[in-house]
Length: 233
Image 1 (tube, helix red, strand yellow):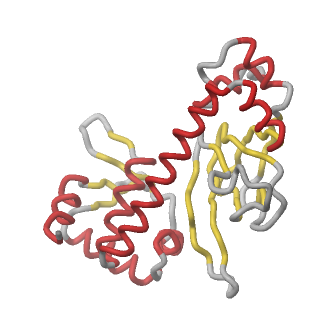
Image 2 (image 1 turned 90 degrees about the vertical axis):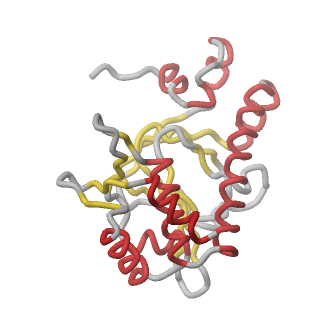
């Protein structure tokens, strides 16, 4: 396989794909690439916030831990995503841990140099604000789910969120979601227990809302799950 140039790599990142040659030339002087192995950490919660990262390939888990060591998954990020989102413009520490779920190739840019780049090319700031705005809306929706819905409803909403971000449609129109998250990870995403996740998934399987396939995927009946959630309202 032909090795990509740094210009091609930067153009593959969604918020940079419309940059001019001049803008890319300015960006490539401050951008670096690095490979990370599975289960390694890009940074730890409360480390000094020094870089902003973009995922070229792989998967990163963003999570927090409380004083008892309990894990709360904030987000699962994939190709094209940037992080950290919250707290990026603070001169502070990383607000969460970033763990490598799958072997990953990242672009990283020193935070201060990235801020200087945004000042020089404000059109990129607009794109960045859109990304941050989407994150704020997502976090607001999750908070509303926890306040307004019971645990079973939250699990169904979580499945729909995962389908929206990670799901694929096959040739027959079925919506498929890879079994890439353990029950413990799913539980940590919404602050419940592994046993509750297991019971709810078993119930959804009985109702044919989700069905396992032969290639380690779930077939998700999005319409039926949405209808079931509507019944609770």
